[in-house]
Length: 113
Length: 113
Image 1 (cartoon, rainbow over the protein chains, first blue to last red):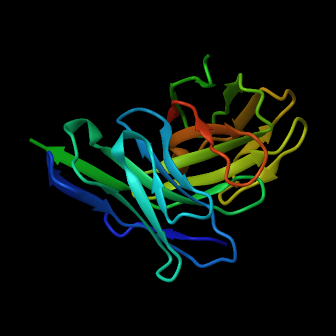
Image 2: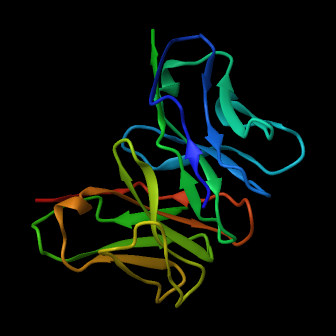
Image 3: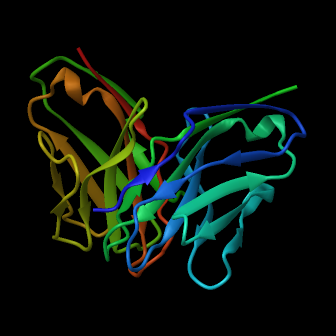
């Protein structure tokens, strides 16, 4: 079975600062990776996904992630965060042929003025 | 376009009571899923379905049953609720195929006392 590790449970950052949320996954022959965001009291929304090819993936709201096969990582980055980016972020790996997902435990991004 | 709709949104149950959570999607998706979200645990897959009349177990299926009698609906049942089932439950759906986006409902917050 696949596994996903999100190394930080909380990341506090000031508005307009850059941020990186870390994600490592267990190795597999083929890997499909996702980042989802959950705003307070809401469901999950897809930020971006890694298909294949280019290792730099761009998503919504100015986020991007870099797939690094040798380090089995898929870190999420944003060059300048806003207050509205305050949310919980989940890294996930697809672990079956039926699009089931294994999630990390989540990272709470706290953006303050 | 409603997407994925879960009912109810909140519920309090007494230990030993039963209930059914309903998930409905209007996107004609083949695949549907039930996840539970607990603090510090991320989301974990309970059961899933790859088509009308089919169901399969996920990571944490004990204490739950599911049914998919119609393509657009996926029901999650608790026959005898336990305090350990206090959680936020999310339904999701997706098209078949690898690396497809899952669309999530808004969640059902269930408390078992």
